[in-house]
Length: 286
Image (cartoon, rainbow, N blue to C red; front, side):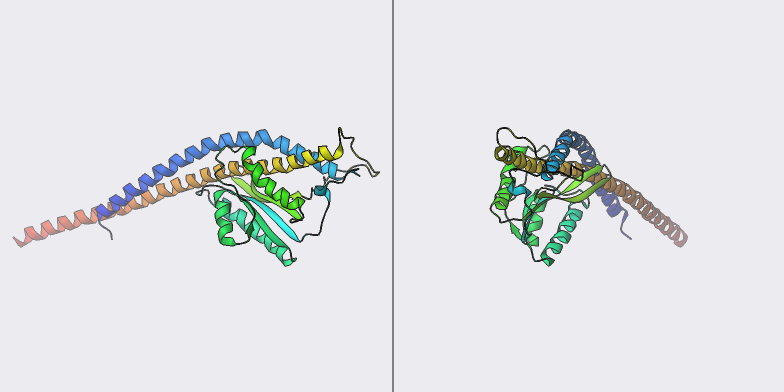
């Protein structure tokens, strides 16, 4: 058994760690509220944008935009959104497992794959995983701006426009609630059609000034908005996962302190018993 002094030192060390995890839990809770507000503010725009584009994709269009054309999938691109920092439980691991599983299916069909990681952990993962990385972004902070993502997104859009990509997906953690964050893979290009029922006869929108000009701008903005929404959802998920992980670490530290305190008391009691035994033995010898 370790000496009482060693156990006492260990208890002090665990208490210091507990203070750190407790502070990190409170910081994550504060950041999570702000991240949720940003996510809630942008989510209606992103969802309505998706509905409008899905409706456009079902029309009999005068101008068929390249983003609406379905091509044979010979090359697939993934924009993978992960965190910049760790200590958030299995959030990133579950996301990467989902990506690897989906990539495996495409490779079995003979398609090549390339990646665009967003977030330091995503960049680090794909360096070790292998595969072609076309562009990357990291260090976006807790309040990312669309301008920080446009350059990275445009690289993937340019590859799609040039025919170097036939499918484009975004992968991120969708915030459900504080305890639940679900990794999802959503198709960006070609544009997914809406599930809503539309008229069976041919129809189209009336565009001003010109369908090409309007759709070029609208569909590019659509892709950018979906990537931005994925990033803010992922940040809210990160803070929630970190808060839960740090709370679990704080609770575990408390249990460990209780166990060590019990061991310390036993060691101290054994030392006192031994001292008394030695005193009694000495007295008896005299």
